[in-house]
Image 1 (cartoon, rainbow, N blue to C red):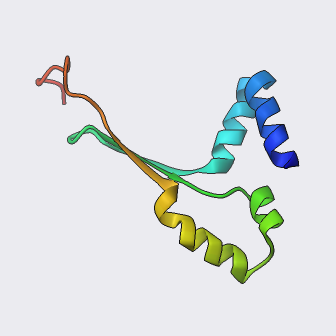
Image 2: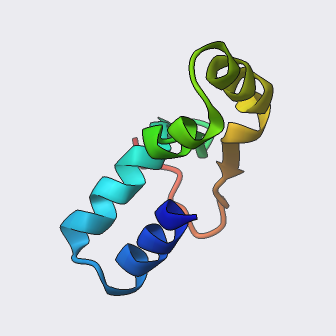
Length: 86
């Protein structure tokens, strides 16, 4: 619970550097596909949250179970885009 309160505080009142560090703790990878206008973001569970879950194999099992839910994909709209951009 303390991590969540701290995260809420950083988002509301933190500096840009603090917000970037918070996002870096949660985001594993961002992949862009310009040809299909897709964005894929893979999230990860930060260490302070994992430490609260327990140690070792439990953490890996929980992360593996949540892996499908830790990925988001967006397709950007083509409307208004010039076709001659490369």
